[in-house]
View (tube, rainbow, N blue to C red):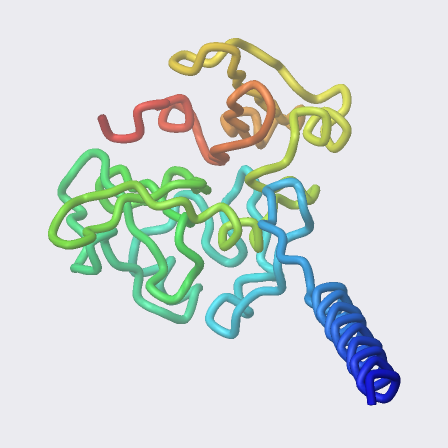
Length: 228
């Protein structure tokens, strides 16, 4: 009886060990099978545009405007060219009486804005941050990934490195220190064509990456403070 009892205990122990080993192996396999999640960074390729932004994906920022919207157009002319009515940043009708104000395309990616001088477009802005009302309080919201679906004619985007901008615009850049960001830069493209001599394309960086792009005409293109 003692021998039989010992054999039973031994067999039971072996079965328990096998069950533990199988469970451990299954757990390890489950962990291995789980996909790793990563947080995208600005240097990665832009995400495919959403349906909302799809029609803006092929339009490019140049010193003369954005796609069919050209510097010098009135709000109505630009709205007709875009096929949709431009609105103020708060979604209301534009105030064309101001010497400086901003409008946007309501269905475009956040971060694409147009500066007005009275009733005419004078520059295009791409920004990595916008102000939104959240719980009735204005807060800065990062829109880098969304605005990266829009590029300049040469392919430069918000979030690109300074090295990338230097490569895209080799021999065409004038680089100066940023007015407000220590270590940051203004990387300015000055057209050589006589008919484009009053225009500029400016990349603002934090010393590493592009955080703001503006394109348009003098003198408004040099207004770092926007309408401030």
